[in-house]
Length: 300
Image (cartoon, rainbow, N blue to C red; front, side, top):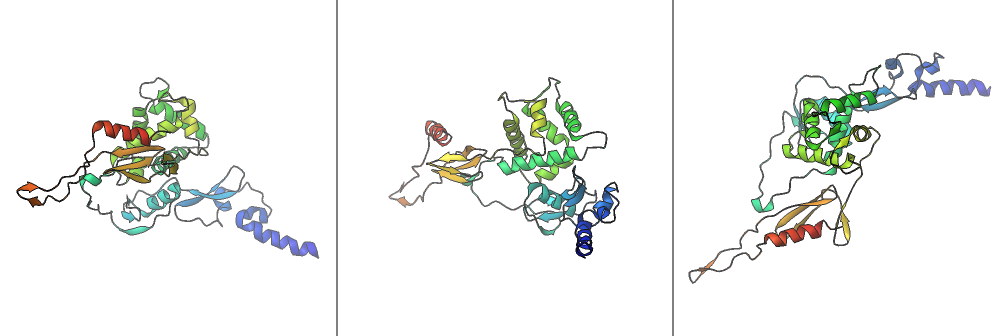
């Protein structure tokens, strides 16, 4: 009596993940049959893992049709699919703000308030994930992922010295135009170069400012997780992206280092009194003082 009750329950629960087991057919059925009962969130599709079980993974391909949308992150996407794919890869929720491309917001900041152009760690990791995803999309039945990565290294090694320098890394990323444009969005193009430089710094284990084939393969391993660094200042550690002011200058923590912009302070009110300017700003900073401040900020 007990076996008569338990068996149907096993069939019901197993049927959601592996319906072929429920009918005694084994796991040799096509992947699309195994995934038929799996519903994934937007930006994900069902794939079969090495253990034979289905799982929702970030999609590798999107349709080519152009129906632009503006994401809640201020980035324009060619269609809904690319927005959801970006959200999946970056592990950040992105909703559709409106149809059509995002309108560039006007900046109301003066020159004295300019923010340093930096590559934050999440931008660096986001770019790496996009590139890894593009490599994974090249995988075929007779070509494992490791082979695809090795081929990419050879393709990116312009001078054929079996090493990738910073310039080659930048060109390598930009070579994949669709992937790079999708990641960049409305970002300053300089950020792309800075993030390529940041990727090089993390992957370069022997500190020779170039990546060997072995280092490149290790860095592009989907299971690899880049380290997260913080910036020390005043007996505490600041998170990536945090900002501090030194006088009238803005400094941003990026990749464990303080990046600063030296700016002149705006002069105070110049009320005339007896034919003379009453006061001027005394916040002028000399080059020597600025270099000292930077050294103190980045002193470990």
